[in-house]
Length: 170
Image (cartoon, rainbow, N blue to C red; front, side, top):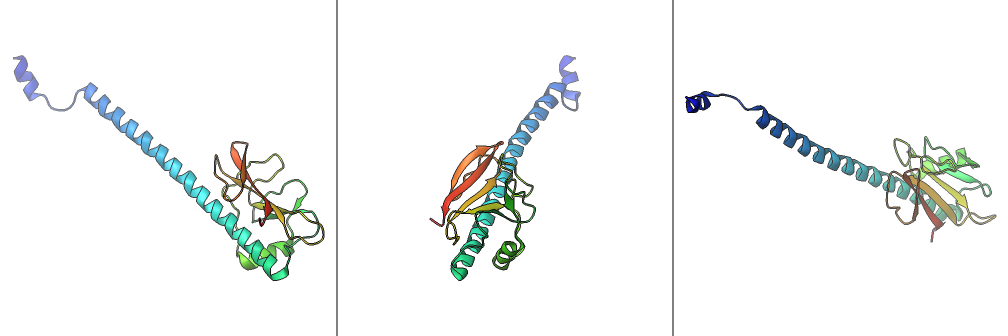
């Protein structure tokens, strides 16, 4: 009698369903973790490419004018939607010079990244290192998370990486 009841049974037991659901949950958590990691790496690649575009635009301006755009020792912020460090400015002449070589001047990171107590939250900032002619710069920019800074030194701040290149160009 007992064997005939087992043969006629249709469906799954509660234990079997729980095992399948737990396996699916485990697999989905692994997939979500890898997708999050890939998204972080893609964001770093975009930010690195934009920093390189800004530095290339700055070098092209220096090659054509024998100096970087400047007005003293002020810190200049590049990129739309950039919060400047303390004493930093957005200068329309500098922005238009950069925009000629790098149209649109997008922010380095989107959404913005906060990594500096000095106030730089997005974009790229530079400061002239020499008086008179601005031939060498101190560059700084933010990267999300624990990123590797291309061509610069990275310092962890507010859970993100504050990148610096000193002096630029080497």
